[in-house]
Image (cartoon, rainbow, N blue to C red; front, side, top):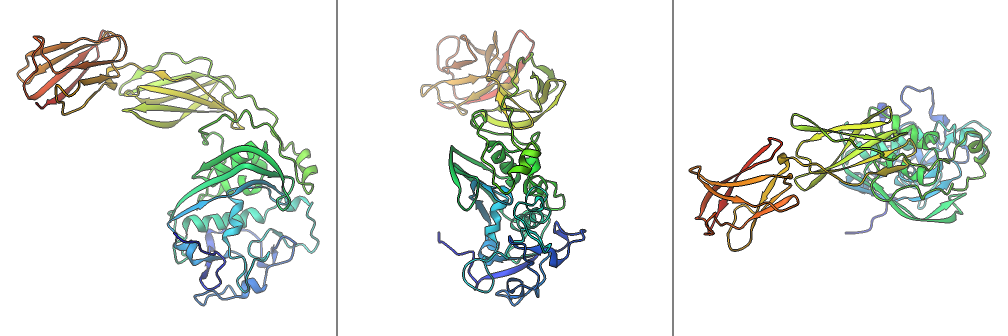
Length: 443
């Protein structure tokens, strides 16, 4: 492991995202892209420089980005932003953090404001103008392009339609910042947020800040990218694991640059009441699946966590008319239903257990009598367990105690240890179900 500088002017290259750019098909010109002071980047020293491979955009800006060779050569990127408000871009987290992935400067040590266009060049710049924040149509396109490069460009900066590296976001929100990114006022949320989807994590970050993320261009518009998808901000597709968000009710203090606009747009989230599961009727068996239903008034999205063979899975549920439902494998042994609203306020049911002989497992296999017992797990009530030899002769009827487990000690009905070989177990119940399996006995 070694520490590298992403600003090393000896090892970097220009990447042209071309027709995959979020500016493709628009009327924007190279002159329109300006730094955070409203000064055009067109023909600036940053874009006139040649990279380590002799390439230069010759002063043009649309779709051109300068990145470290080390970053492009990576196979894994872990993005580690700090959660805070931003005086232009409303808040900063995963998507916005990649301003720092561009070369700070292409012609001198340090960083300049040219590396990432922030606003449109109009000749009269105001930090509090709507075009700088809520109606900013430049920055979201530029930062979306940067995110697409980090996800889809190969080590030579060539854009592919398949992702080129693994990607994880870990947001430090333990001590977050409000008001202004340069001189933040500390606010302790004592939490860390992580996920593979930068847009989805930013939506959750915004929820923790009590901001409506669909009003933040860098998040909501980045989610609309289709040719090279970056992520989703749709609450129906985002499942939050971990602590409930109902304690996150502090609205992060706005930047003075956009506080009046935020108030006019009803930007803050004020409803922190999560929908809850009020009823889960008995499951319905449908072939090799079961239908799980949950009643939850006000449900916007639902997810079911279900266990099959001691492994857990998650599936999005269909929702409508105050209900959520999904089909999961009949071998599901237990499940939890989580419901949420459009602002990711969520609650989960207590674990439910589904009894079916389709779920039965037996172990260890092979089995050595005298060194333990053979265990049957996930049995239903009133199940009968019979052990047969390969000749079809009944060897043992295994007693089943109360509960969902039973064990066989390797003895026959006469109390003798059975001989080595293959045995067959047959389990039946009063519902007419039947489960069979083989046991290899080794002495």
